[in-house]
Length: 141
Ligand SMILES: Nc1ncnc2c1ncn2[C@@H]1O[C@H](COP(=O)(O)OP(=O)(O)OP(=O)(O)O)[C@@H](O)[C@H]1O
Ligand SMILES: [Mg+2]
Image (cartoon, rainbow, N blue to C red):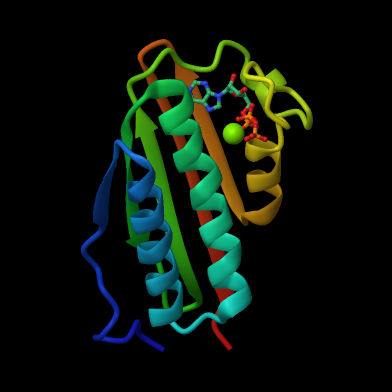
């Protein structure tokens, strides 16, 4: 089955500079997950991931952006979100992916928790650029 003509193909870009932007990004992610036909638990799953990664951008980089895309294919339904910032970067990504590792006295659950929630998770960080790409993928019924 071809992707429905009604599903968007143009990615949505959201600047993340304040708390309200997290709300906006969550809402847009949920909207797209619903629009392609996935249920409330997948909407919540992706919204939770968005909260964590957008919160990290505000907390550690000050500002950044995310781009939300429909990556559905004839075989699969999918939403990808790429988070990017130009902050200091994550000095040790392997450490940062471990449960309980935090440089800010947080729970250190954001990155590893997000990885567990998602079907795809890629992280690339160096000084001046951090990029985290996540995707939720479901086989079409
Ligand atoms: N965008 C980013 N830029 C720079 N460092 C980051 C970024 N995102 C995460 N980090 C680093 O990775 C660590 C782990 O992030 P993670 O979200 O897992 O935990 P946390 O933010 O410390 O706590 P929690 O999210 O549980 O409140 C952070 O403490 C921080 O040092
Ligand atoms: Mg965090």
